[in-house]
Length: 241
Image: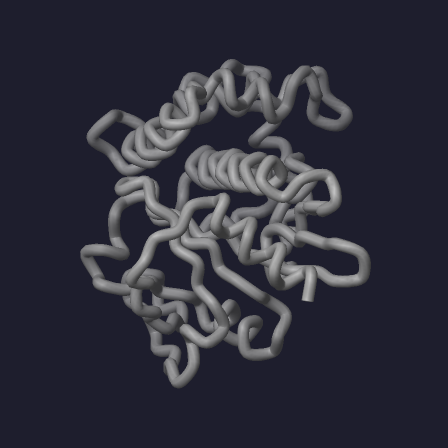
């Protein structure tokens, strides 16, 4: 239905995330089941895990295709020239990427820390799609909170560009204190980087032709990659000050 063959954009995105999951002994199908279980979309009999797997494989049944179309048909302004199913693909892949991060951080942090979803469509319903949140996840302990945005490179672009392009709004959130970290995930090379507020000091945002003219600032790739366990340790230090 869309550009999902192995050599095409969405096929490459699917493969990159599948390879990362394989490192945690999960397939896309098994991980979707872990995340969604038997839950269904509101006011529907469609199981979330079924739609997710069908969509990422570009093998949508009529009932899943109909649900996606019914919820996204009046939101063409969000798709940024993407086919409706391509936009849905990106949303769903983002859900799974965030859930992987939440799962690993939850394990590393333990039960004294509460992780909440704050990003676009946090209910995983193709409904709440207005970009309002400053981060994808918030981690809290007692009265303190750390906010982290998850930013994923599906194509190895960062290494080719020798930098990570952050949208001007994200840079602004750093500078205003609304965002604590960006967790940058390079799927192709299966590496994680932690970008901190100081990393954007002095950077100037400029129109980025590759992103449709959106203003971005290029952040140098951190010298050291991090593990998710190391990210959890950093968060603990912040929350226990």
